[in-house]
Image 1: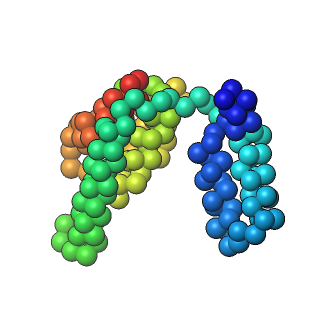
Image 2 (image 1 turned 135 degrees about the horizontal axis):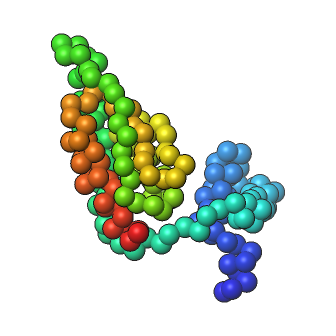
Length: 165
């Protein structure tokens, strides 16, 4: 089993690379399978020195709930942004918020920044080099402290619990 980890450091990534390759070439001929397998094994081997060690998901059920909450928030935010665009009775109040981070793990910070960006009306624009804060642009901001509290409660704390960091 140890040798497999040496030659296949990220089996999930390798499988995804193989499937993506086969979808791109739209063929499952023996030659494409062989080339796809070569790439799926070779790319992770060549790039493994650049990857940070990934934290383990400690609570997969909480992760499933988190994904569900984020999907629901995306639907709600889409509706809110659509109403801002379609019913221009009220002017939006755009602004920047410097969100202080409690979490220090780089992967969790990246997941938080991506989660904020996926929600329409908000975009993560910068992470401080020391990892202390995240700069977020908001399309329609009412109360800065309320936004910080909402991001902390809905996104950052669940991510900390999922990865126990």
